[in-house]
Image (cartoon, rainbow over all chains, first blue to last red; front, top):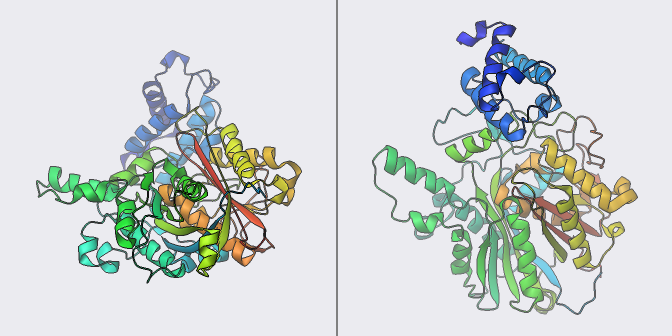
Length: 89
Length: 409
């Protein structure tokens, strides 16, 4: 698929767009050290984000597993990027 | 145990339809031997699903197992119930008993009811502009399976369905036992039936992100979700005096039932609710935590459920937890939702009868957040006096039943 050619940075940029929109977070508040708690990203926000990630990247990512360890935005984006890239490998 | 003078309730028959196969033996042997019924998912329509596994009942149709005049009224969930109930009735020695009459009732747990029929009707009528199924209504009703059993065995006492999501069947078993204890009936068919592995339903579960894409591994580090199942398990419960009078087989005694509600969150379980349900069941049975020898856990394989359940167990059972096997058999038969408590009650009863604790398979490493003994991967022979079966539902509804050996008291 076309997304297979995206770099990590490009994937991360798209993820930030998704997180801002689906998590209803002001993009200005999206910084690497922001925690999911301070951004008020609860589990339902993550569900909505993962739905769009699935539509965009054609990948199923469950709530649990590696994603459950993410507590800040950087680890969330890193984990999602890892999963997207490994699914394209 | 409690000696309140209330009527004692025994299980005299059991039957099942589940991913491991048709029959109670198929389910118990799979659970005992760690043989998973999970396999490649087969859906009747393409819905672009990403999760490709489920614990499905293979090669099953109502027409294959039931006469045409019965099958025509059946969603697959009702057909599961009837096939399982026939086995239970036969084991109980009631197959030739004729109509069971007004002293017999039916109480079944159901999660979604006839969702396969709903989906088929919608696709056919709305998308394909086809003919509506004239029997859609009696197939879809959440009480459809209950009414099928009443008609089939002539049960003219109280009958109803219990809908409390994943706690449905365990509540049905507990409430059915209550009906006998209260003297409302002498005999009641209880259990649960469900089949939610329909295309849109499955996709909806997937959208909640609680399904594992690979392995269901309850209480294990690295777990990443549950696997959907389907099926039915049906039991004949009878007053002990009635069962003894006709020399019925006594499989187990229903010692206690407890239920509670979190009243906190639709999806996130609260350990206080789980703890309250287990404590209520112990109180109802009149036994102490030390008297429980095995827990068949709800153990879905999600991070949150297993953590909350394990911590509630540790809190209630204290040091006893170190000597208390707690296993989840959901990796074997899947999470059958409205039927889950029934499939697991069957496994619990058979564990008690055979003095064997079934394993939690797919377990790879202990999780410090789940401080219980999960009976990892291998069954364990162990003399069992009593066993507990837990069911904790979305919406925060909790139900627990405790069984004991019928001749132990």
